[in-house]
Length: 334
Ligand code: TRP
Image (cartoon, rainbow, N blue to C red; front, side, top):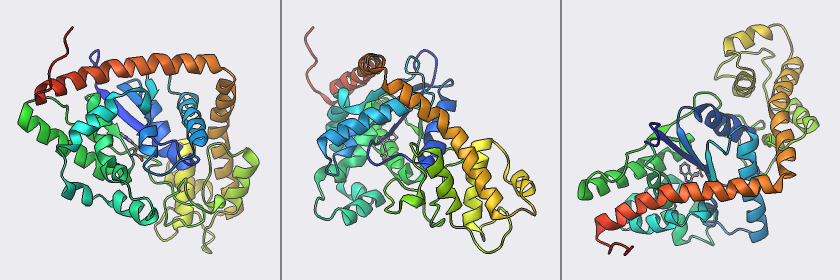
């Protein structure tokens, strides 16, 4: 609890271009949650180096992501928006928690298996202990709630296990966090293969809508979106392409899938796709405009980065000192 509010923590990596899926599935939900909780929204740059990164590119993307958080509607005066690497407590707590995590547990992580298959030439120890750093992120702020995508649920489970294990040895040190899966838009699928999640690392640029795509590009991608030969706008698993477009339209307009079926009954996919495209443009355009505006205000962003890193550091240090004391490290002399 901070000032009588429950604590929310979440983070995203600044690698790859964020997609509409990231926006509807995560960012948009974050904005709606930001009044109810005391929120920490982190740009997890330390997680990114588990895969080799170009330094200039990483720095640029981290800044762009942080700017996007604000552009999407997270007020940096109310929400703590910061870079993981600016708060040393993340790495320090991760080291400690490494000593309370078993190799066997980490070996079961599906993301580790996937990523090590994909990057067979660089299976580094950081990739293996990635979930421990994530546990540190969450536990440092005594988070109650952690909005995540379904693919991160296993990491949230291990976070809870580590926290419970630690608490059972040392008493109530950590709050046990709950995962929160957003309702709508949590699973926006690829426009080219609606059985696959829309991904920022898809090789086919037509498969994903990127948050910074201009209106023409967005409209073109929806025109090319894979549907089927049913010629009927129905919300059914038998028509995964159409279903995905309905989900997108629903998330962008707030309409219900059944109402959308009615709206397009007797109409062709052409009209439907155009409406979906326009709904996406009208959601993304204001965010894009705000990114452009904020990018011109370097000193404002700089000031927010400094202020929020200090705020995050304050809470992180509080937890870290408690942990260090509990496990028997000598207290600091003041
Ligand atoms: N691993 C998460 C992802 O790739 C990002 C992340 C890092 C995160 N630390 C976190 C998410 C803590 C929630 C809470 O999506």
